[in-house]
Image (cartoon, rainbow, N blue to C red; front, side, top):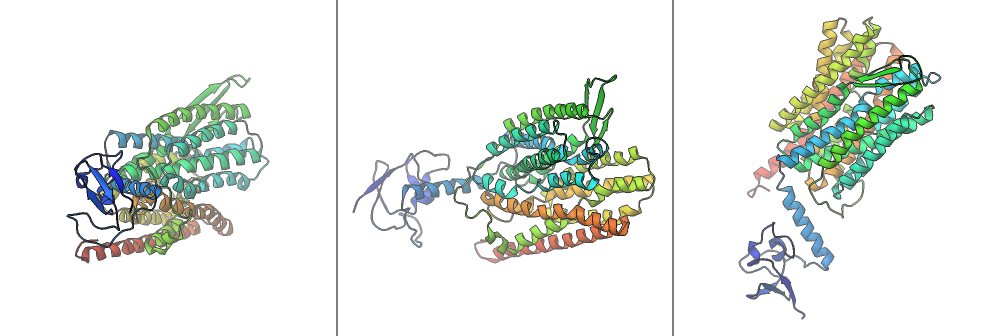
Length: 506
């Protein structure tokens, strides 16, 4: 029988540490081998697999049939070791949070300000199209924010982060500049709807996923800071001045999801988009330099859409709860300005309500993230969802300034709390190496709720002419979502209790 020798970097082999990487066989791998050890530090392998001297007897494990199999086993060991050593802080980890936060602001900030573009297009460049047609640009853009999750999750689990981030950054900036050149409806739909939607969705998904590699106990805080970038960017004012060939030129301000375009014209929009594009370019350069993944990734991940995950009741119920949640989560935010104008309030005050939402949403994300780190994230998610349900029941009855401001503050707190606590349950439902798959499948399915939510609410409003009915529908949907989240908490607690009852705690 041939004898094979494997050299160890250190002696004895059972004292090998994870730091000794090149040319080493990990102890767990060594325990699989039948061996004779000589004093030169060489491991002679022959005969059927047996336990090494000094180890407990156990069922034999097949020896790797090829060098590729052995390499794969070692890679799995490295991933498991990395999963057990989550930094949960430190300069490198917080630099990742900083980069992701800037990226979220650059990618998602303009998407959150869609109402700005809708109003401008209706009054200027797309006057020949109905408001419903124009609204499809924003609907496509929002839906695609979650849509790429399935593909992005697969790439992330394979170890790719910088490449998708770089490609999406380049294409996103290109779509911003191309939107400045658009003059027809189909061009805006292609560049601003599909282009900005897909590229923004790629980073939203992968940016959320990468933080699970760097944080565990402080994951809620990290997510809150990262998502806070969208609100901060939405509240920022961008002033652009130029020459349109008319006295006084033009003045453009994008602030709090609001735009004033004086002497509204195609040149005015073009230069406004160009200035926006250069600012986004600067933010994304920093993002690409600071944000990075941590785990090496795995190659054999099985099917793209892993149905076995849906055989886990907790995962299936949780994904369903998020789909239902997104049918109504943003309805109060979407209609409060319109309802205020219909009640006779000044238009400027109505739009200023969006500034309040953006500012308070940042606070809601921060508070929600801190609470999710200290308590069960599902408790924070359930509480935030129920608060949003109460707000949806109440906002149609707000008929004075004080009531509208209170409702607006509660909208920001509740939505911020939901965003700050919706990722952590995915991280806790399985191995960290597969978190991209779990989040990706879930986020892709959430797209269904986003696409259907606005049309359903719009149909109720058109059929009844009553904001109260929209509020009743939205609040009831959110209560159902909270109930499913409570069921998820119960289903996740059952395996944990079962493990505690076993002698070894496994």
